[in-house]
Image (cartoon, rainbow, N blue to C red; front, top):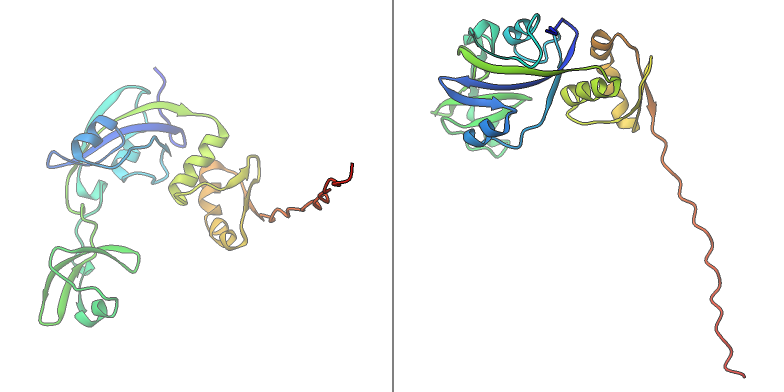
Length: 226
């Protein structure tokens, strides 16, 4: 049977649970049961931290199209809880952003997901730990197939790093054709692309298409004379 090796690109089907409750899946039936949003195929490169560490390592040596089920400890999943990530923040910092802080509220603070533990006396206790940190997680998973097409590999990395797809020309280098404001972002992510695909990335600015308007033909009004 064909086995998975590090650096392989694979399409992965999975369902992830904590305490028997589904928190993530890309299997339609399981997503419907858990009330999750529309699911999409997930393609990843094995050994490049595109999934939790335990599962990433576990995929090596697994057989294609065979289902597995494993439990991962916190240190191999979403990490142990870190008490240094629980911080006291003045209430005025929230009110300046027109937020009324309440215990149990989850929100994005400085690009990080945070949960308010308590709110009293103008002092707000906020937990910046991942909500799944400190928890054992169970994954049911199957590698449906290996991906060999270069375009699919590049698009998989775009989905993961950009959550959006940009025009590109495959090869070495991979040439991205993007708007000027996007160039620094693509250039910043050129190293992960090289590390995973072994190819350089070049970014070119997309030129705006100039539309030329043809002159209108003059309208001829028929003469009333016979």
